[in-house]
Image (cartoon, rainbow, N blue to C red):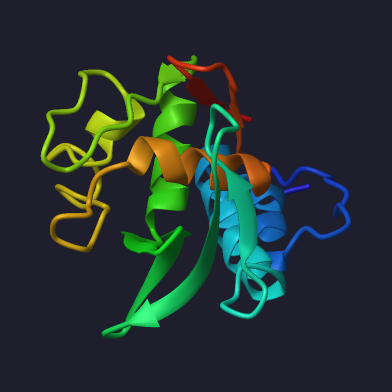
Amino acid sequence: MSNSNGRTQQRIPKLPGMLDVGYNAVRDNLNIEVAKEIFNFIQIKTMAKEQGTKENPWILKTPPLTSDFTMHKDTKDGKDILVCTVGKTILHYDYRCLSDLQAMLKKYGDWMELGSADEQKPAKENTVEAWGRSEKNPIGGWYGLKKGLRGRFGMYIPPLMEKLGFAEVTHDPKGNKMRSK
């Protein structure tokens, strides 16, 4: 069966929970990677509405499973952010980091070391932490938004990615890694 632009349409069943935009992109034989990214982005937005609010934050553990912290989605200055609360310390990360990190990990295609470090310390090369502050990432720098507290991306974002079902994370005392699902 051909569509109006001459491409062959595939007969693809619509899966439960699959949003029309992702389904239509696949059905119309568009680039499957683009369709997946659209679907993942919308899925992240949808999940945030159900859980991850200030009233109902995600309750998480650091990768070594030694500390608890919470995260929730909020808006600051018109920008979607993740608010990470660790004890009395509050960190902010650009909400876009979730979809950007997942896309990078899919492209990387293997386990990547987390390499968590404070803002004032250099990040180990080829780690999630280094990518989260690199000029080569999609936003051209830090996903952490609070000056002085922009680091620890590799400690706090991977557990949320795991909770949302977008990544696998190891839980060893040191040297933890993650990969995209």
